[in-house]
Length: 292
Ligand SMILES: Nc1ncnc2c1ncn2[C@@H]1O[C@H](COP(=O)(O)OP(=O)(O)OP(=O)(O)O)[C@@H](O)[C@H]1O
Ligand SMILES: N[C@@H](CCO)C(=O)O
Image (cartoon, rainbow, N blue to C red):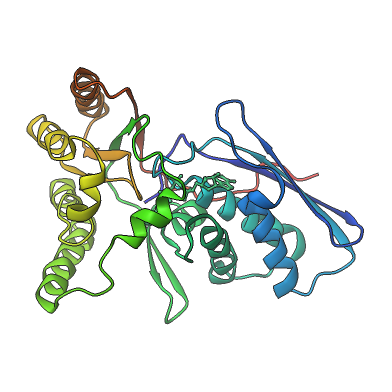
C-alpha cells in the first residue's frame, strides 16, 4: 500500500563515458551512503548489465525523503525511483513488470532477498497485487478516503540489517490450517475494497496469523498500542514493513490524529521517544517530475 507525503526524489543523468556509476546521497536528516553502499548503485549496475548498455556513465542523485530503518520502505523508494528513471531515460518501452524486477534488485542488496512489496507500492501507487507467475500487476484504488496514522518509535530495532533479521525470523513453512485462515483474511480484504467497506478492510488489516505474532515481539508495547488504537476508533492496526513503525487505518483525519497522539503519549510515558504523522493512501506511484 502506497502512502502520500513521504517520497524520495532521484535524479538520473547519463553522458558518454566508460561505464562508471556515480551515486550521491543527499539528506540532512539521515545517514545514507553514497556510491556502492546505496541501493541506487546496484539498480544502475543491474540495469546496465541486463540491457547491455555500454559506453555511458550514469550519475544518480538520491534526495532522501523516506526515513530509513523505520519499516517505511526507504530503500524500496529509492530502488523504485531509480529503476523508473533509468527506464525512462534508456529503455522507455519497458513494461511495468520489467521495471519492477529491476527495482527488486535493490531490495536484495538492502535486505538480503529480492522482494517486491515496497517497490511495487512505490512504483505503481494504490494497493498493489502482483501475480508474478503471469507477470501481471493489479492496482486497487479504494473509492473511499482512507487515512493512515503512522507511529515511528525511535531507537527501537536499531540493529544492523534490521529488515534481513526481521525476515530471517519468519517461518519458512506454515501449516495448512494457518494458510486457510490467512487466505480468508486476504480474500476479506479484497472483498472489503470491492464493496468499499473500510471497516471490514480495517478488520482484515488487523488480522495476521503468521507475521504479526512473531515480529510484534520486537516492538515494545505492541499489543498495548494495538488495543489503544482500536479502542479509540482505529479501524485497523498492524506493523509497517519490518517495523518498528506501526500504522492504523481511519475513516477521518481527526480520528487518525487523535489515535496518533494517544499512542505517542502512551509510548512517551513508557520512556520511548516517538513521532507520528497522518497521511492518506496514495493513488500515485513513481512519476517523472522534470526532464531536461
Ligand atoms: N537509497 C537508500 N535509501 C534507504 N536506505 C538505503 C539506501 N541505500 C542503502 N540503504 C540502506 O538500507 C537500509 C534500510 O533498509 P530498508 O529500506 O530495508 O529498511 P526500512 O526503511 O526500515 O524499510 P522496510 O523495513 O520497510 O523494508 C539502511 O541500512 C540503509 O543504509
Ligand atoms: N515488506 C517486507 C520487507 C520489509 O518492508 C517484509 O515485511 O519483510
